[in-house]
Image 1 (cartoon, rainbow, N blue to C red):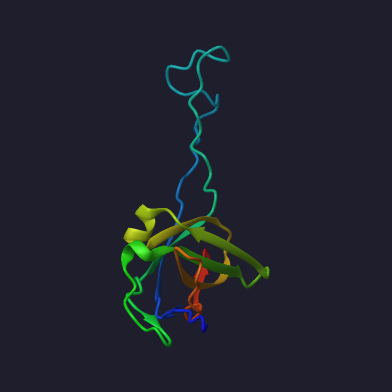
Image 2: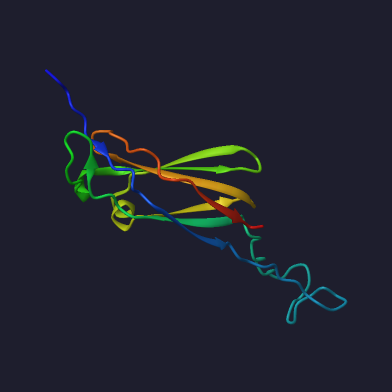
Length: 147
């Protein structure tokens, strides 16, 4: 018996939307360092605004709709098990893998990577079906983040 495997088409394309997590600190001016209405050390102090924790990248892709190989055919949305996003900080040579298998994210075809350090990154993505069959990785996309 010949076992034929269906291969998912590797036409998953990437789009990167980059953004920085913002936030600024608050300072007081004046000689005493007290805010107006401040009664000294026993008063309630305002909570400082947290410093940015890093940068983010929104990864977007086109959902594959077909398989390739001997048993070429369509790939339905409910057959997709998820996506594997591989990204690497080229400047530090650190590779990370994110498995996206949440159905609401699969339906939207986007995922936000957060807390990224400044650097030059490369991104690739593969799709897998509910049986664990993987596509090839997409072409590599590059982005300078926080630079």
